[in-house]
Image (cartoon, rainbow, N blue to C red; front, side):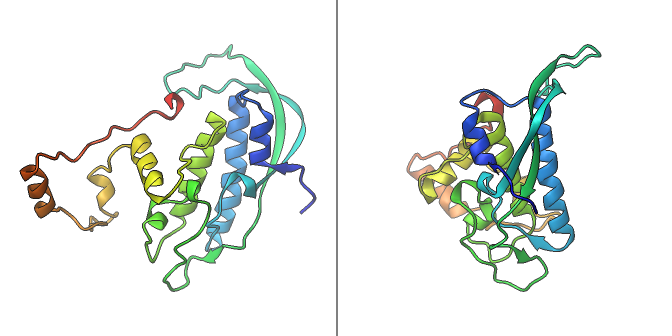
Amino acid sequence: MGAMEGNLYQLIKTRKGRPFAGGLVSSILHQTLLGLDWLHCNSFIHRDVVPENILVTTQGIFDYQTVPVNPEAVTSANTATEKDVIVIIKLCDFGLARHSDSSGPYTEYVTVRWYRAPEVFLFAPHYTTAVDMWAVGVVAAEVLKLAPLFPGTDQMDQLHRFFSVLGSPSDEARVDSSGNPLDGGAWPAGIELARVHGVQFPVVAYKIVLTI
């Protein structure tokens, strides 16, 4: 691999608040996902997908067709264009990569806290390539916002930030693809104790990333 100019974290900082063109966002994520797809198809989990590990080289300027990042926006044949840089993206730093078919338990402390998937954060002994996809989603939000999505200061603050953005876990999120529970299930004793003391467990609604 040839020398690269820098990384995605540095590119975000150079924007100084100026949003990326929609087409450039698509290009960054498309290339990142192509790299991860190759890794996953070869049965490896990267486990450290962060902006600093996404290398970037710019190659001139391109007129990107305006992409409606807002899902409610409507495109037409006369959609405007946005000038922005052309980028080449490469994944790097495979020091934490692990073969997905290897026996566990897997390492509990991997990747930077801000990009760590909930199952890793909650010390799951086994996990899948889904932890990389979570990290890519968090990076995607950062590319759009030009700021980290979950900049938690510690473990509890990180969980709070998950819930404040994603909302309370739905019933569907509590079972796997076969319908088997992924958590401890209902907690009737805790619910009754809360009722006795007049405490109501909060239910948090999710937020649209672009409104954060």
